[in-house]
Length: 239
Image (cartoon, rainbow, N blue to C red; front, side, top):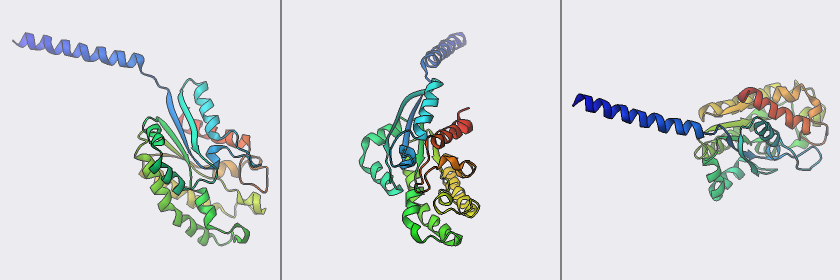
């Protein structure tokens, strides 16, 4: 009797190993990549035209390494706020489906929430406490946005931070707002940690490369800037 049981267990083990072997043979490491967010994710350039974004460059890099199965940035739009993302999640079933089937999601959101809360024409960059309070006001909406995306996107998720465009708009020292953007990074990182996301800070990257923002009247990067963001993501998570 014991011998029969042993044979039975061995046969069962062999079946399991065979199934696992077949799965491993056909399994793909390619990624379904979904991009979400505002003009930075969409690819708005410094002259008001939509073109290549960091999302496109990143997708190209994944494709070159034979790691890309599917990619879309149709859920990105200039001017998007956290509320726009939340509204889209409520009404767009295709987005929910894409997120459920995603292996990787990148999110650029929150900058417009902040910009809408301040008056750029009368901005007092010396009042850091006031600017930090504006960031604090938008954090609950940002967290709600990430939390709701996470309901559907269960795999890798990267939150892309923001650079400081203000020195290039107002000809101020790049160090004047170090404290503010350090605070923004800190708050974004807390949310990323809470919802098991990765976070990419762009502050130092753009501070060291003013050439990424060639138009003093516009906050959007050129192609070099977008490519640098994509390379930053690859260097940190996909080397």
